[in-house]
Image (tube, rainbow, N blue to C red; front, side):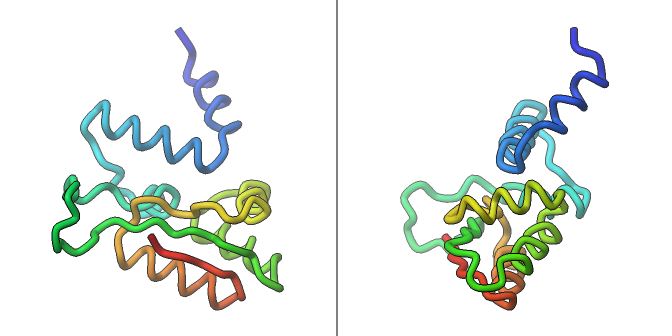
Amino acid sequence: MATKDDILESISNMTVIELKELLDAFEEKFEVTAAAPVAVAAAGAPAAGGGDADGGGDEQTEFDVILAAAGGQKIQVVKTVKDILGVGLKDAKDLVDGAPKPILEKASKADAEDAKAKLEEVGAEVELK
């Protein structure tokens, strides 16, 4: 059985996207949600209901924030991604370099719009899906 230190070491080597997937799997397996504001900022808002598969007229409650392009102020975009997600500079830079990439997945409308506004303010091209 892995020790707590082994688990923490493994987590510290994960990318932001891998951490998001781990959080989702953890929430699903143990039927819990991340309630701390830091966890929400790092991984997006917890799922608010299952959503309709048929898409029949219900307002969308979960949004993905996609960084389409960094634009001319790449350093500012990296800093903004770092602040939005609460990650290190290396992880933020890797996300920006890999654009188009999702920055937040399954985020609430308010969180998604806030992230989009912050990124567009520093010159990034952002899409909400």
